[in-house]
Length: 201
Ligand code: ADP
Ligand code: MG
Image 1 (cartoon, protein in one colour):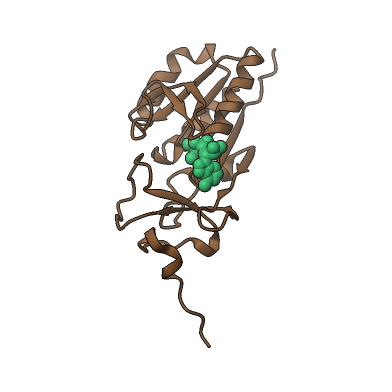
Image 2: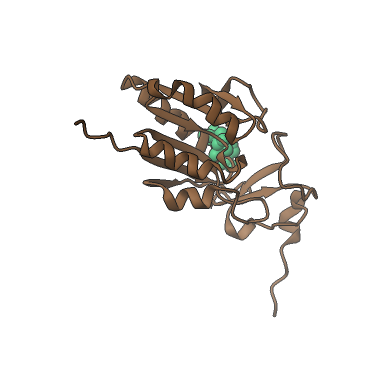
């Protein structure tokens, strides 16, 4: 009787521009160097760059299939599952909670599941399934970006302008990475420095 290969769940999280996609791409490329077979997916909400790849803001790319939802992801993955060792998923925050049991199922089948996504929304609330996936993961990598106001490590995603819709994807200039001191959810952040409250005397 063969011993089953243990699977593994890895989460790469942090704000926008923190290098999540870069890190996912790096891990998937290394897996391929190790001759492991990789399948990568992303939700079709993220059409910034290309439908057949994931991309980082720093221009690294990796082949990926676009899927509409968790059911589509399952349907794309399972017919070829015995030929795949590593499953990559970018922008995982946009998937429904059904991604959680799917990830657990894959790990029990011996797969390495590497998922990248935002931990919090522009309103600083937990983003979709990511916090639960972090709790279930074997390894969590929380990256920081660079605050666009002061250069400090940034853990927040600041939405610029007034839109309160949860998902406004892709247009450059709509979001910035911000540190705690310069993150203002719900404020119009085009002039953040001027919005700082005066010190109470
Ligand atoms: P994420 O997937 O987390 O949004 P990416 O991997 O797409 O991040 O992009 C990371 C790259 O974005 C960095 O290597 C850097 O070249 C660029 N970048 C642009 N703005 C920032 C910022 N404020 N902080 C850090 N990196 C930034
Ligand atoms: Mg990304």
